[in-house]
Image (cartoon, rainbow, N blue to C red; front, side, top):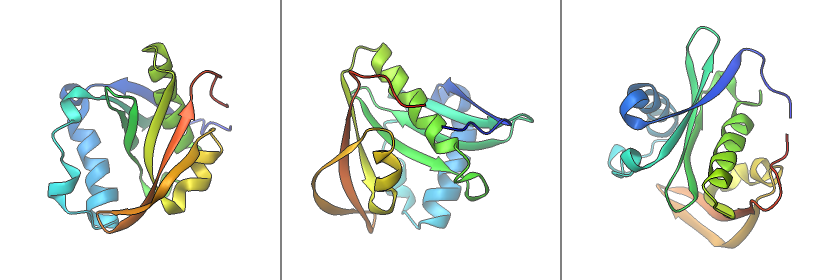
Length: 150
């Protein structure tokens, strides 16, 4: 998997980087995808491990989080940075963190248009399609017994 040379991903906490994480999620989920703010802010952020993708000049361009129960969520990349490897970098970092915690699998709720993206990283669909915030989703799971691609 090609890494954008001008982007790095680091693990952060909500208390340290919440403003940047919030800005990305509002741009992608609230403004672009019209997710109601009351659904976006679920009260779980303080207990999650977050990852933040930043450019060489410190511009925040993507984020995702890992819940204590090994669910990955709130994965968002700003439109100008999509299809450039940023999402893959975020996903691999969270899969690595889950493996380091001793978790043997991760799950996520994928917007159906993104299923192909997650499949490239070893995720498999399970269960039926459902609506979340007016957007069709499917549950996906990936075993962490093998190392992530990339």
